[in-house]
Image (cartoon, rainbow, N blue to C red; front, top):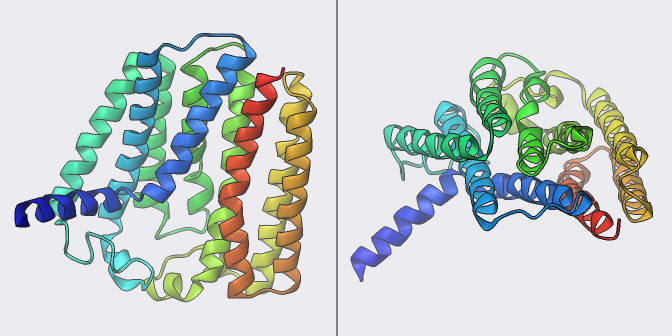
Amino acid sequence: MIRTLTVRNRFKNYYELTKPKIWYLLVFTAFTAALTASLLFNINVAPWQWILLLVGVAAGSAAADTITGYNDRDLDAIMDRTKNRPIPSGRISPRNALIFGLVLTGISLICAWLINYLAFGLMAFGLFDNIIVYSKWLKRRSQTNIILGGFSGGAPALIGYVAVTMQHIEIGIAMAALVFLWIPTHIWSLALHVKEDYTKAGVPMMPVVSSERKSVRIIAITTLLMVLFSIVPFFTNQFGLIYLTTASLLGAAMLLLSIWLMLRPSERVSWIVFKFSSPYLAAIFIAFVVDAAFH
């Protein structure tokens, strides 16, 4: 019984190390992008292709989160929001975390290679952008960290699309770009909510190095850009009123929240913007699938 509890706790710790709340959404964008492509062009995706895609993107996203957690372990130990994560709390040693992250990296690259060469290139690029560009080079040095490091967030959607087809690849690029444009609103609203934590750790997130007034304006601008861009797929002539209506209504809600934050900046409102942004993105990708199914 004790051994069972120990194994269960160990599994739980390593699972937590991968930051599942982050990679769940990224795997979802890959899955829905692939499903959209298969529905739009009537392509049958074999079970083994689905397995390679889902396992590959899950392993790649989890690898990136695990190794960035290894890189950021000193920062995580300082911030109240992250000090209880597996590495800073001592539940997993840095060495074991790194080994685990590298194993996941290998799994993700093998799966991507077996899909096709473009999926492999995108996977390698996404891992490099997140682990090296964002975590090692920019996070501690520049407020552009999540912008230049945000390309990795869009990679899973494009991997999902090209795993199915290369036809009208601009659709897959638009899906990836939408995730890329979503990241600033999502991350900066969180950073505004936990500004004291980032300040204490010396991480130059935009809300830390800029005034609150400027920060909420920038968040409103990035939200506007994201919402305007979310309409672009409609003009590819591959999506109809289902997608347009969903993107418009959800976009209006995101804009209203960002305006509310701009007019009444507070930790509470920034938290609401942050929490709403994830279901917003998920709903947009569901709209891609539903519209494609009735295309």
